[in-house]
Length: 391
Image (tube, rainbow, N blue to C red; front, top):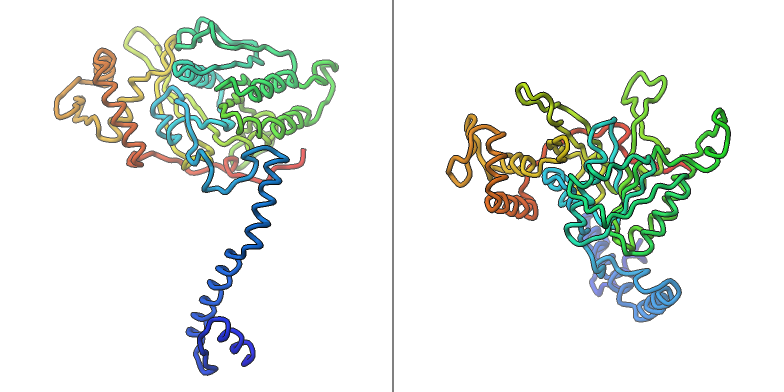
């Protein structure tokens, strides 16, 4: 013990007595650790060797293949609008570029509508969009009604899952496409299944296809900055007594590779007097988010034939953040009553585009400052990340 204390004393240049208590000895040990770390980091031979190996890696694998995290050119992940302001707020700005997004939910819940709105937003900003229609069910008229420029929308209708994912990979690697939508994972049928008999038992074939394809294209997606959206369907697990029996198709690989997973559900049917149903109310839960806090909730109206009510989203968000206040049935902005009832308030903002633009700017400023409150829901068992299985 005496020998060790003497060595530490000589290294630090301080005389340490053997009678010191434990707290004082720990203090000197911390100083010793700090000095050792400084000695290690300031070693010129180590710095030179590190510089040589970094240069060698960049020569072999390309510039930017390795870097210090603080030197990254894009520290904050860029986003594109989803088409619903409430969802943009819940996502922390929008759909992240260079990431995989999964949108799943029951039938007629708004999955394709949400994806088409995202395509329309990218096209408005001058971007290029592609739609891989594996279900062979894309409606050009409805897409155009939602604001999609169908003359400049790239559409592929492949016959097999391998062909669909190969098309996605080539589009992403070109770095010329800003958003790719795959509709849907359930329709990505492996070639062996198509060429086989109807009664053949192909266990895990689609899961293996998805796992292999995602391993291949995930890196290319990150380099290109393209948003890749997979639409997915729900199935029921057999024999589940406790917990959520719902499961998405295509195995579990997509759960791990997706940076954002959106669970969209129809929660209400919109009716107006004797006119009947004119839309639905949808709720989206951010089941997973690697670029912002998860488990946030967003709600919006989907009007039949028109898509997501942009002004309705804005009004809901403005009320939630007190940009627009409501007393009873009256909505007010800047201390002045603007309309009585939600429908009239939406109509007012549709007619007063300058007021709507001003409110939207205030909301996005609040989001940038981090002062927007969000409703949340606890995580489901299936939302928790697990180790990727060997498929």
